[in-house]
Amino acid sequence: MVCNLVYDMHGENIPINKIQQSLFEESVAADHNDYGMLRKHANENFEDKIEKENIEPQKFAEILIERQGHKASCKDFLPTQNFFEKIKKESIAGYNSALIAAVGSNDVSSLRELHQSGGIMHASNKFGESVLHMACRRGHTETVRFLISEAKVSLRIRDDFGRTILHDAFWCSQPNSFIVEMILDQEPDLLMFKDKRGNAPLEYVKREHWYTWNNFLVERQQKLLPRI
Image (cartoon, rainbow, N blue to C red):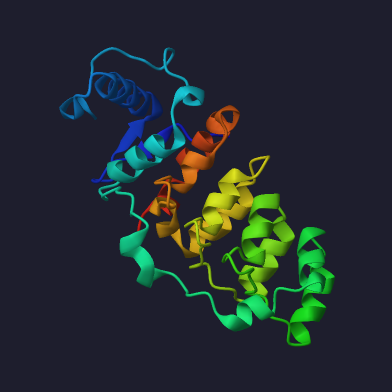
């Protein structure tokens, strides 16, 4: 069941219709290039007018974060170099057909055998796209869980285009909240890292999935809070 409350910075409950009316005003303000109107409250109830399927998830997430007393600001590609792991030669060397096949088929048993025999689980191709990127993009929950929980693969990775594993998780053909939640539990800051084109992870969400992900964001709003 979808939670119908969010919390402001003082811990007070805010009905979801209040969030929706704020979002409505943001859209109007953006259309008129008047940022000063953003987050201004109106008296009219927009609960029936504004549906979560018409709200951009990135904008929705930022409001949920700010309502909890935190600053929601996306981080550009270049100034964030030190946050991420650098691509290592051993990672590229470990990117082999056996590992790719196991990840591609969501075969955790084979992955475990490879890991126990010394296989590199943080392997990536020369462009920095890791097997964890691949598993997130394909929605392979079991493989992602293995790589994160058992193999202890770092989540602070991105390819040479700036895409993090969270970009790929939201790019998945079908929404997979289990994978996204696993990532947010460890690295919620990934939510606000842009790729080289200036897109944050939630901007990879398909239009037809806005409603699903906005429901997720409301239910998991406390997991969205930044740590850095």
